[in-house]
Amino acid sequence: MSYAIISLGGKQFRVQEGQRLLVDRLPTDEGKTFTPQLLLLGGDGAPDLSPTGVTVTARVIAHVKGDKIRIGKYRPKTGYKRHNGFRASLSQIEIESIGKKAQRAKEKPAEANAETKTAGLPKGYEDMKVAEIAGAAPSWKLPALEAALAYEQEHGKRKGATAALESAIEAQKEND
Image 1 (cartoon, rainbow, N blue to C red):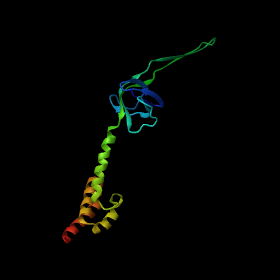
Image 2: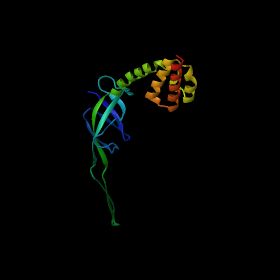
Image 3: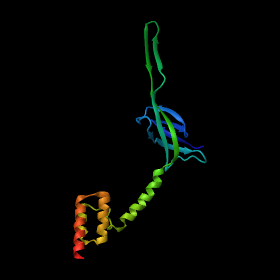
Image 4: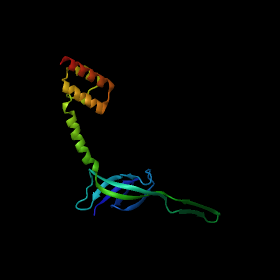
């Protein structure tokens, strides 16, 4: 059975999947999920003090008030009596899952697609400024210009760079 130690509101809790906790009031709305800070992951085998690629997902079930605490002060022979009370604002949470991030697996293919999309671009194009693109565009070949234009339309949408690339493409087509 796996467990995790999380940090919420400056306090640490040992949690398992399906467990419900009362913690200090959270800014998250009721019914919403959040990911608390993960400090340790344990269970089968040795505990991992610095888990990477693992997340704990928790859902806020309700915002409640704690039990009333009565505070009384009394000093003998003077008639001094004071009474005060306090109720803590709490949030009830349920731990939904302790597991790996699904987004990490999705990000890797996206990075591979980005590398294939930038294959036809001129060297160092992503870091170029609009003025540098406008100055260098007339010397690029047509496939590089088309790849750069596609990149701008998908990512940057910089007007000056798009205009410079379109005019360089038209000039290349007129020369051919």
